[in-house]
Every structure is written in structure tokens, then in C-alpha cells.
Amino acid sequence: MIERTVEVDVAAPVAQVYAIWADMENLPRWMRFVQEVKILPGAGDLSRWKFGPAAPLLVEWTSRITRRIPLRLIGWESVSGLSNRGSAEFFPTERGCRLRLTLSFDTPGGMVGAFLDRVGVQRWVDENLLDDLKRFQTMVEAETPSQSVV
Image (tube, rainbow, N blue to C red):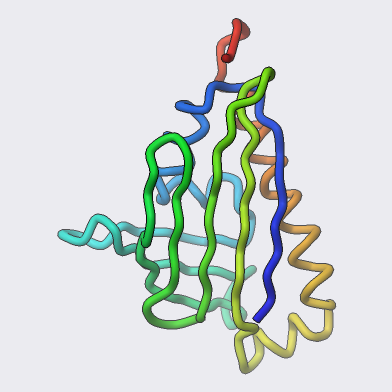
């Protein structure tokens, strides 16, 4: 299992950062290889994910929110498909909010796994997670009025 943690400081209130992240269907807006996240009807804590650059390199899984502490933490794990788990933690700072994202996952098999092995999966994950969080930071800060964020 591969596990990575990345952090970014966002010049926005914790409540705003948490609210945007907590709406999981938003994730494709800043996570480049997340193609789709759909909350399953009648099961607010279950979501269906599609991840990858394009077919045939797409993988899918169903994920469950395992822990939610408003304005502090969202934890999840897969219940089918690609084995993974993670958490997003939100910390108030003088400038706004520090977001810490931790992901753990098994490398998929087949063509996707072969592709990831060729590109160096751990380096690829590190670079892409940090890029994704920087995109999130830029997006949130662009949507934040230029006033005190704390």
C-alpha cells in the first residue's frame, strides 16, 4: 500500500475550505485525474468514484465516509473497487486554513498498474497530489473576498 501526505495553506476561513472540500462531488474541479464523484442516492456517506486520465486507464470504486468532525476532519475508505483510504484535516492558521491530505491506496492491476509502474507511481503521486492541492488553494482563494479570513 502506498501512503502519502501533502499540505497546503489556504488564505480562506476554515469553514469555507471545509465546506468546499466536504462536497465530494466538487473534487473533480481541482483533482486532475478524478473524473467523477457521485454521492449515491439514499446513502449520503457513500460515493462512487472514477479516476484516471482516460479509458482504458480508468479505475472505479465506492467509498464511505468513516469519520466526520465538522470544520476539522473528513475520513474515508473504499468499500469496493480500488482499495484506498484517506483523510482531509483542516487547521486554523493566522492566514486562514492549513489543509492536510493523506491518501493510502493499493496500486491497481492491469493496464493502469502497468502505466503507473512505468511512470514511477510514488513520484507521480507526490507531484500530482501537491499540484491538485495547489489548484484547490488557487480556486478557493479566488472565491474568497479580500478581507480578513480568520
